[in-house]
Length: 144
Image: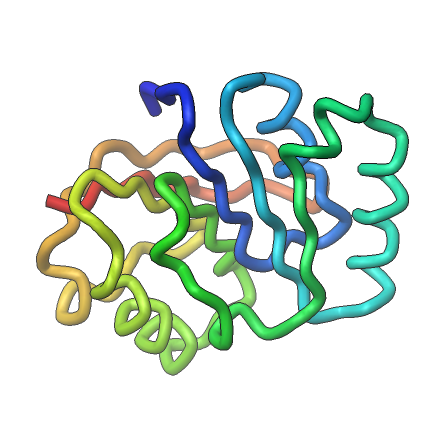
């Protein structure tokens, strides 16, 4: 991903916060935000972050809410956990992505971005990875 200092990671559908916490630990000059709609998963993420150092906690944020009601433009790297998305949700995601800045990287799981909604995104890579819940193809895009 060629992560640069000051970048912000948005995990859209962050579950228990693993990716946000990992980002924070791997990139000490960056910040992370996880957004999760299910309160029980959000609470686990918040509890996990409480075990981080005070410096790390200052760079982590978790919100409980609908990803489609949030501002995606604040992120430079977006993880869209789209495994369970139907075509309607993927199209909504494509619409939201139209507002992100050039150079923004978008990572989707199991599904590629809908081409008709994301013509300004280049596919950088796609690879199969083992996840805690099974295998998933990870697609990495960059906004032109």
